[in-house]
Amino acid sequence: MNVFRTALLGLTASAVIGFGALAAEISGAGATFPYPIYAKWAEAYAAKTGLKMNYQSIGSGGGIKQITSKTVDFGASDMPLKPADLEKDGLTQFPMVMGGVVPVINVPGITAGQLKLDGNVLADIYLGKITKWNDPAIAALNSGLKLPDLAIAPVYRSDGSGTTFIFTHYLSEVSPEWKDKVGENTSVQFPSGIGGKGNEGVSAMASRTVGAIGYVEYAYAKQNKLTYALLRNKDGEFVSPAGSAFGAAAANADWSKTQDFYLLLTNQPGKESWPITGATFILLHKQQTRPEVAREVINFFDWAYLNGGKLADDLDYVPMPENVVKLVEQSWQQIKGPDGKAVWTGRSS
Image 1 (cartoon, one colour):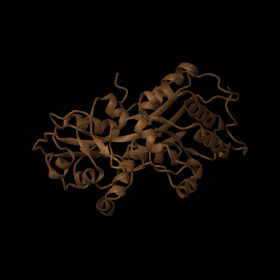
Image 2 (tube, helix red, strand yellow; image 1 turned 180 degrees about the vertical axis):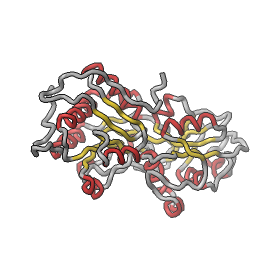
Image 3 (cartoon, one colour; image 1 turned 60 degrees about the vertical axis):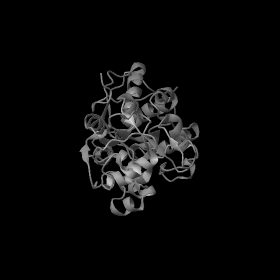
Image 4 (tube, helix red, strand yellow; image 1 turned 90 degrees about the vertical axis):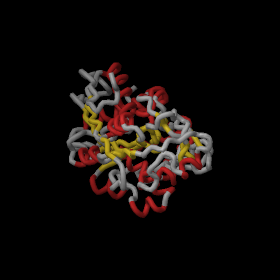
């Protein structure tokens, strides 16, 4: 069974977690970037609790819209919302896990890790300035690698996407032309290429289009055996995507100095750092009308912090450090029920 289909995560029945009334179901929607690990966590959590949860893997833009309109219990976004935007909509956010966005290619004769790219070349490909795989700019980075005279087919996300935000934020950091002409957001006007919906859609489009290049969350590339490229990082080193490289990029991140956990991890220094690293975030309303539901949502994510590290490692995500988890748990105290009391007061076991 393909874990990457856009689907609902089904957890059946219910079980006692803490005290008080239990939610019959918790629901969420948003980012496809963390879907692989959320699916694994959900499966493991079901075995422990039986609590039913539905997660719609529809993209960060959709998740933000649904949590803002209160049609789901939590939203998920790879683009952290700015503190002013959180305040405007009565939301709070916290980082759940970190991972990497990787360029994947479909070029005959080239295998995973053979092709080298840098930020400027990647930007120029998506700007439509570099249109052939044997372009001199690509050849200059790949001495000794036979590059075909083949048209490049850029693939991008057609839906509102935090993965696109991370990708375009990186391109804006390394390419002044990209920043000026296209910029960064969950959805931008790509100058060239074809669109695919979700990480799943981009993976599928890149797989079946000869000459394609796309950008996807690493777990999708790994599980679907897509051919990835190496990237030159800020220190000038060509690095391969892996959990250790994402962790290196996140190593110096100081979440304690952020407001509302607003932090971006692209183009970080360090010889081993992967340059397109990002965190994914959960969005909750500070004021809850159904505190028992909010409590179960928080119970699930707290369980994932405490017990989901190994599953995250297996999929090359980077778990949040314990000091960050403590900061997140403190932030949960601002989530209140109708009686003004915090809906979550700590781990029940």
